[in-house]
Image (cartoon, rainbow, N blue to C red; front, side):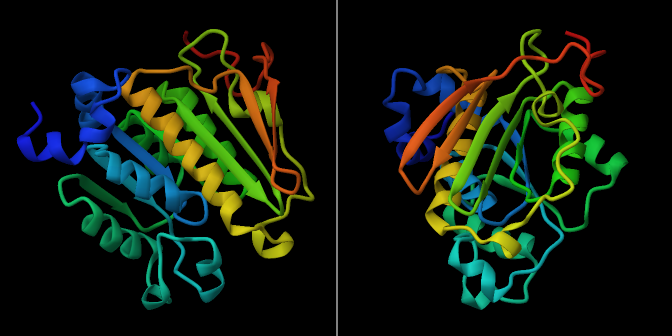
Amino acid sequence: MLSDHELLRYSRQILLSQVDIEGQLRIKRGKALIVGLGGLGSPVALYLAAAGVGELHLADFDTVDLTNLQRQVLHDTASIGMSKVDSALQRLQAINPDITLVAHRQALDEDSLAATVAAVDLVLDCSDNFATREAVNAACVVAGRPLVSGAAIRLEGQLSVFDTRLDHSPCYHCLYGHGSEAELTCSEAGVIGPLVGLVGSLQALEALKLLAGFGEPLIGRLLLIDALGTRLRELRVKRDPGCAVCANRHG
């Protein structure tokens, strides 16, 4: 049940007929893994904590740097040099002391990633490199967990949801294959702060829809964001029946 305190704290989203008390209870029982606590992970963690997701797993092996503060709004100047996970713990506990926060300060290897993904209801990939995205996707396919994937660089953003429990859903590998050797990071190519805030906020929204069970998640669709022209475009994404990662999944 929800306490009187929780009914008041979450009253504005409980008022939505699509959420209501039952949806809030699902959110409270929900467990989510956030991979990366940078530009994308910041709004994801802030909004999911504020919304009352019952258990948040926070994974990042990096420390806060001065150059992060232009866009990584989870951290502040006093956090410089601190583990991003520890910085996040302080901020999120202050926002909502009623939820459980689980820290993963070390890089997740294949075994620990598999175990962590299996222990949650969904995963949000907020990382900034292709190798991590591929590893997270593979773990989600094996465990049968939905993956909310976001990316942003320069003035362009992308967002999609992959849920291979559904026969028609592609996985990340269906869309991107083996990636590109010329992959750039924000430290090399740059990025505008509000863009990662936008993509991360949309990731948090997709996660809440999946946890509470309302709306139409972005499954089989890729949202492209052009920040320079303030334009959104949507592409249909089909499952690859010969995908090396998800072709043999159990649906």
